[in-house]
Picture 1 (cartoon, helix red, strand yellow):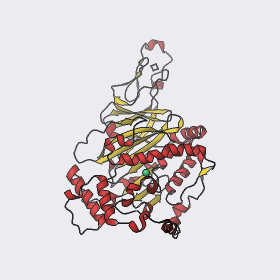
Picture 2 (picture 1 turned 120 degrees about the horizontal axis):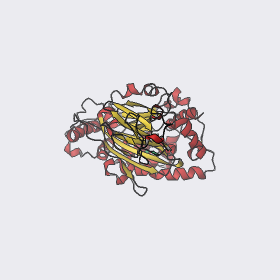
Picture 3 (picture 1 turned 45 degrees about the horizontal axis):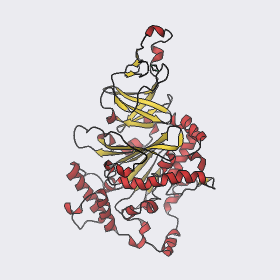
Picture 4 (picture 1 turned 180 degrees about the vertical axis):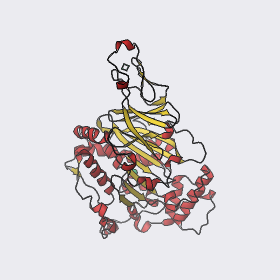
Length: 438
Ligand code: FES
Ligand SMILES: [Fe+2]
């Protein structure tokens, strides 16, 4: 570790040229008001102006492969049934009976029709009214007017998105430049190998923001610093979305003179669970190229996955996109995670946090998607073995969230202060959120 003297010296290095990037300079340097992380009024505003207006990821296509398969997607107190109504058609409906309002479906399942559990009103999968018990008693009900109200649906890269706003722009236009970026990642060809969820004691933005910067790595995850070039991450700000490329398999500049490229390469492959002894790689290779080749061989041996054409950066680095507002996708082969954060009911102090592993698929037929594994409030992320080496890392992140939610309320300071480069994705996120709410 560096001495205090060395740390002070590091901190007085000249301003990195990245701070001069126009897209980042334009974000400004103002503090973000702390109330927005716990105020019920702000939460209500988000429901009206954000969640009812924005495209949001509801499920994966492989969650509903057969006609009649459905998934319920809840956000705040809004609830949607996403159903495969025909082999090639997915529809979404408000999850509320048109008789007296009972929720029609919970969780997920397969059904021939959407039938209310209370009095048995029934709709076909395409939303047309099929049956009302004692039809004679409802002469005021016209079949056409009592179709289930629909919600917009669109798919991209295997993700099913919904939007409550009937006048919204198309998903394609909403995604801006991302479809072009993602062509090479082909996430629609991957399958859900793990899906873990937990209600976390923090506002959804507090939890989301823990995954929008790597400034916390040195203090929160010191064990991964030896192979993570945290400070060297590249940040890109787009219209509503943003991206970071965080180099893995290289040492953190925080290590100062202790930076060891060899140890970084070995540290990363051991973290992934690769035994270097089982590989045949020339020792002549540069350390990062060695780590990339090790992961290629590992995936070839274990998943029969040919990664020979995949670049070093796509093999190793954390390539992370924020798809506004609440979806963070990591596209690399070795870290193929999807994160989603959403309010839990109308409690601004809680959120649902989900982590998926989208594994590349080698067989013609995709394996069935992993069922969602809900952790209880007593369980840790490391209690989900399917998350492998990431569970303990997520527990370190999770340990900050309650402290942050409580500390935000207890503060004497009106707002939070952000780093101008390393936390620019958070600032950008708030800028876009402000645009929705104003
Ligand atoms: S509330 Fe649904 S059938 Fe009565
Ligand atoms: Fe973290």
